[in-house]
Image 1 (cartoon, helix red, strand yellow):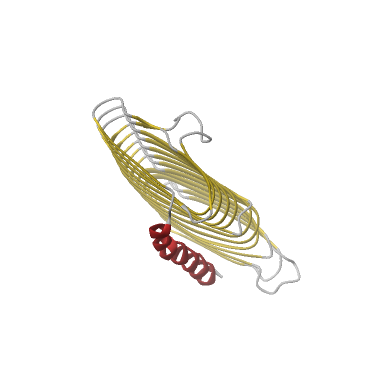
Image 2 (cartoon, rainbow, N blue to C red):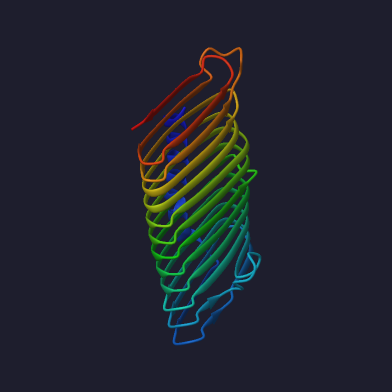
Length: 321
């Protein structure tokens, strides 16, 4: 189940990225280049049969693309075959907001370098939507919202300290979230609801890491969570027919909690550290021969593991040393 879901998501994202060549055919183009302090950029594009393409480049401090307090403002791109928005900001206190709606294929590409960067993007009513965000600095924040899309992919890379990612994906056929954070004080929150296929792939490197991933009303859900640091904490809840996940935490003060509901659930939890705690709850189908599979491995001090399985054909393994 896990391999099939990953292949599906990868194929959809590859198709969406390949379609980026369609941007060359766009006949509604807008570009803005600004240098200095206190830059402001607002772009609105709508109703174009061929496509819409916008590029914003800002160099300096206190740069603003759109309204940072709302996901409904910023660069607005509506009603076109292809919607593509690229933003590059260099400096401190950068803000970028974009809204893309009613396009067959949508792309949001952002690069921010500096401190106190904030990004908010909303994608709605599209056949395929891709968001790729890269942030380098401190106090970075990414807020993403995607709804009513057949295939939605969100990729975020953050390097620095005090990074935060909040992703909400709703009523999508395929939802894929891929995050990579490197630094201290990292936090990731992902919520996926009412999707046929949901994929979580997250990695945090640093100290005081925290991941919360929620999925509900899905057919297939897959997790891959990796944390390396000091105060790791991960919570995953799934309400899907078939779900699976891998969780690896290394460090001190680790805590992992997973809740799976459905006909077939599979999870592998590995923790290494000092204050480890792992709790796993699975609910399966009593009539099924192989409903729930779970393995919890912990290595360290003050270890505590709790495993609860409901259904038929359950297999649970707890190894502590």
